[in-house]
Image 1 (cartoon, rainbow, N blue to C red):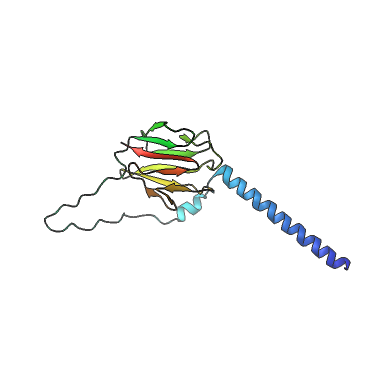
Image 2: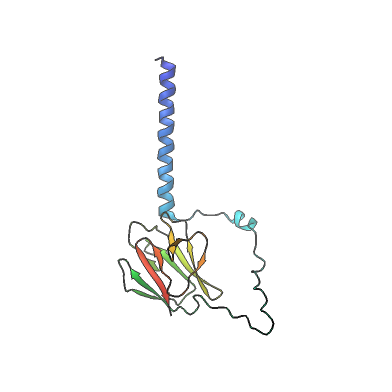
Length: 167
């Protein structure tokens, strides 16, 4: 094999090795620091929501009654995992979930990310939002892609921990 061909093979191998190293560093960084930081310029250019969808009109003579999904929830109860039986009062509008010590619900297992998910109270409904976690957040057995409404007594799984919202 000529020296030029050997040099090209070595350089190619080295390039592939460095790409592999940088991809590993990127995954570790995402797991440690959570979501990517969006610059203020990108936030300023983001589309603004003007109004929420309007509910269809009720038939004549009948009133339109909507069932509240999670607004009556006053506590979060862990039903499976390391902290089974622990109760957290829902006395604020946002609750963070993850391995970080600063989280409101600290999930201490290897399947949870540092900043894994958050529960947010919006329009009297509790929504679960996955924060680009590695292993995902599951609501009633389905993976959460976009923020989803959490109904009372519906299981939510983060890592090995399962919890429900209760009145």
